[in-house]
Every structure is written in structure tokens, then in C-alpha cells.
Length: 309
Image (cartoon, rainbow, N blue to C red; front, side):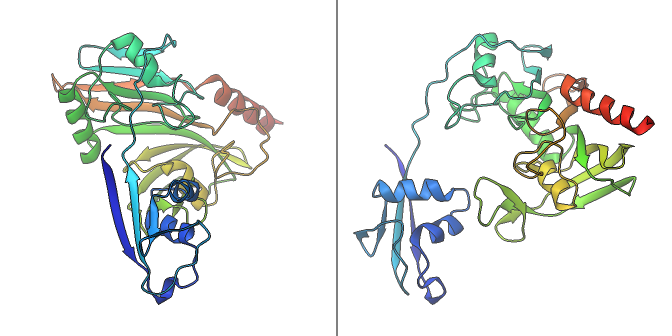
């Protein structure tokens, strides 16, 4: 099985720092629990010796870490209903429901959008590997709305290039906490892994990537605001992180919002409302829209009714 090997040299700055904490900070794509599992599996050595997760570093410690390449599980076609907006021999556009995971991962090996697409399409592009066939961009599990998948590599490369060049566009609707005073604005703040909670992202200037989100207020309700957001970059949890950063977390967001929610919604009130791109084969400009899901519409109706009182 192919492996990846890394080597680090501890300095006096890392003296007395736990090995699992140190490796989590330098391998920012890994959670602390993942690092601890690698240590437990004897994939980490310090000065040629197996150590435990609570080992405290000393100056000039030589750290070697080996990461076995993940053996991709075989994705199986599953008969999961799909809401298809458009389909041809190159692309398929779907309206993803809230609660559906896009591609298999730890804890969600089955029951994903990929499993459903494999049943419906029988074949998808292979550029993103065996675990993510056809997936050009993704939506979080609890974000609903329109997204496109590629049926062949040519279509995949075209769509990926358009997203990178920002000629393909994505428009989202969100209901956020608080009253946004500005009618519109831009959040230009880099996003990277959270410094202490590795399952979260955060605005940070360390080990981060540029991220830009435009927003426009659609309706105000005093304690809540309905906004339209446009992604100019595509970072993990970008809208959720940026709205929380400016003090207006998305309603129902389990990671970045208040623990208590006044509304009945399974996840964040965030919806991918519109997607546009040039067709990979014909070059024709294509626009797809997904109506607001019932749970978000119910929240808006409730807020409008309260506003009239």
C-alpha cells in the first residue's frame, strides 16, 4: 500500500508541547483525533522510537510520520430519489435536499448523493477519484439546493476551470441572526482550519486561503435578516464562517451559530438558489434555480407574520 512520509525537526519553541498537538498544528488538514489514531497505530516516531500521544517534545527532536494511503471503498449504486433539474450526456444538475451527504466519507460510507448518481447515471467522471466520481463542487450535508455533477472527464475539466476562473457562478439564500444594517457588502477574509477545533473552519491569517463573499440584504426582520450571498471563492463552510465572522451567523448552524434556535430546521438555513455555467460541450450559457425549501420558507412566513404584528 502506498504511503506518504513526513519529517519534522522540533525547535526550542516547541519544547514541552505534546506531540499530537504539534502534529495537528503543522498538518492542518488533519484533526487531532486523526493524528492520535496515527500515533496509536505506530505511524509516528520521535528519534526513531515509537511514542505516545502525550509525549512532550524536546529541542532538536526528529519526528517522522507515515500516512498510509486510504484504500478507497467501492461506491455502490443505491436507489435514492433524485430531484433532477437538468440532464444530458455531459452533465446532471440536481436539487440536493438538506441532510443528504454529497460523497462517501468516514461515517457516511453509503446513502450519499454519489451513490444515488451512480444508480441513475451508471457512469461519472473519474477526475476526483473513486470516492468522489463526478463531483466538481460540493454542498455541506445540511445545505440544500442546486449543484452540478460531471458525467465525463471533459465536462469535469471544463466546469472546474469555470469555477476557478469565476465564470461559473453560485448564488445562495441565507437567513441569519441579527439585523444587518448595510444593504450590501463584501466579506474579504482568509479561511483556514480552526486553531483548536479541527472540525471547524475560521477566519485566520495562518495556514489559510483567500476567501471572498458578497452579500445583499433581501429583507429585514429586526432580530433576523434574509440575505443573498454570492461566492467569489469556494472555501469549506465559506458563507457560514464569513457570516459568523461579521456577527451574523446563519440560523440553525450547529457549528458557527448559537446552540439554541427559535426555529424548527435540521441544520443551517442556507440554500444554493442559483447556479450558472457555460455548457462544457456547446458553450451555451445555462442557468438553473432551485426554489426555497419548505423549512426556510416556513421561517420566512413566521418572521413576516411577526413583523406585521
